[in-house]
Length: 261
Image (cartoon, rainbow, N blue to C red; front, side):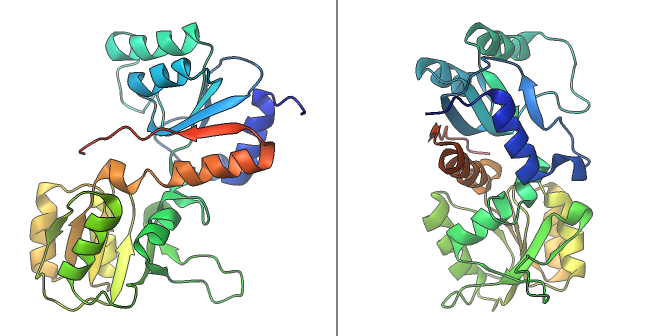
């Protein structure tokens, strides 16, 4: 089997995810350098100390995540949990690789695409034969579409989400109101609710909720669903890991660490 070096993996990931197209809140790609050769990759949602320790225990060479490190506005000093995480990575030679908005947006492996697959949502497609999803909002990060057959109300959709994601979502709106059009953006996209309302959908689905979304939902008549930041974003990195395994023949394992947020 050919040896796979970290630069081979990074080159392919950058080619597929195109991070240069995004103005992100953290660096995309290699965040901490580790072993030069890659044989085993652990994937997860967030590069927490617990995930890194599991990766080290499993003999991994790289950790590929959606939520990496070095976010804009955070304390730049390497102290506390940041020091502990970095010390773990360096001591065990782990390459820490993160892709944030590029993974949210990817039309096949992205969080929005994969959440649609898991929930059975039917994305709108561009009418040019390309099959690309219709996107809108800041950075083109919001998707729109229709509910799967059999889901007619907010209560129906909430039950489907609870079954598929394994946690009860926050539902704001008339539970018996008929729904047809839906917009969604995984993670912490509650700040994009107004853009979804302006799009004329019946319901907006994201991960988290802020105080003001209750009033926006009541006053606009557009239902709001907060299904969990972690819960809505654990599928993209799994799909990306599967693609890495298929392309390179690497041992790739997803580790899901429960997070109630």
